[in-house]
Image (cartoon, rainbow, N blue to C red; front, side, top):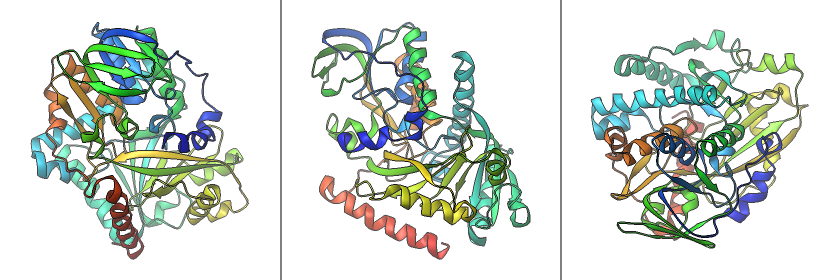
Amino acid sequence: MLASEDQLTRNSYYAATAAPQLHSEPLRGDASCDVCIVGGGLAGLSAAIELRRAGLDVVLLEAMSIGWGASGRNGGQVLCGLACDMSVVRERLGREAARAVWEMTVEAVSLIGERRREFAIECEWQDGFIAAAIGRRRARQLHAWAEELEREYGYGAMQLVDRPQVRQWVDTTRYEALAFDPRGGHLHPLRYTQALARGAVALGARVHEGTRALRLERGAVPVVHTAGGALRCRHVLLAGNVYLEDLVPELSRRIMPVGTFIAASARLDAARAQALIPSRACVSDTQFVLDYFRLSADHRLLFGGRVSYSTVVPRHLAEAMRRRMLGVFPQLRDVPIEYSWGGFVDITMNRAPDFGRLEPNIYYLQGFSGHGLALSGLAGKLAAEAICGTTARFDVFARMPHRIFPGGRALRTPALVAAMAWYRLRDLLGG
């Protein structure tokens, strides 16, 4: 999976406009530390920052390069909430825990602002998020969702927009209603991730790129084995999501790799770009198989939405993404696609995040289900708190029950493909 994605990742708009890479050396020989973090994305880097602040010796191992995975190639949308509806959390953990989870997701958005200020990160931040409903039934659900957030979670920030005013916010006839959240926003995810890595290194974390964790030896003093050496530590944090592959089989059975893809248009005239989304907020529709898009700082439309549940990259990706873009903005028929890219994210059966412990000294963070740009940063902070002995907030998430995907590796992908075909049909029928 890593090899098949590498060229696609290199073709991304983000890679073309990123800051200089960190270029750290692989781990060579044997070493020791307090905490070994596996995975150089947002969760692992956030944990490294917090653990260094607490005075712990931290080594981070990244198989490819910093931000190579989902952290550096995603849609760039920074949102409150989870990929699943909050009712999933409320039904399994209770009302009080659900409110605590919601408030932590709001904190996750604020944490990005704090980190941007602390490390002077230039990542093209833009305020605002718009949830967009297709059809009357979805519009009613959108209204109900905004009302529930205010009633159950005290979140009254949403501004509802009905059809007569929709085109003042998004210049398309596709949507029946919108909900605008000023607390959300969007950014250049690879620039942000790279800046966090530089911040972690400045605080004293040791980062080794090109270093795949091949074997995890458990025990009172865990050992992480790599091709070039071994790392003895007191604690391990696994933050590699689908890219851990066979390192910890009991975790890989709880998540499914799902391909998600994005395209970047050619640059638009500034006025034409502004007319598409006057607020310049990021937009995501509320379909199960959704489209999402935003304007870049240089006036391109970045449009995502094509997904693959078979781990196969679609052929003619740019053409497929352009068709989806024109389904929302037919007025862009004369605008070519200049970049198209993608990769895999990890989803859980219930689309709730999966945080927990394999052993008292081995923690893991996974299952962000395509909704992790903000939450992954907070997840790393919660894991660091738990490693340092304050476990209450981490344990709220760790209590969430999760099921393995049925059928094992051979059958789980075909089963998911069939299930997603059903959800696509529901979207088409307005269900």
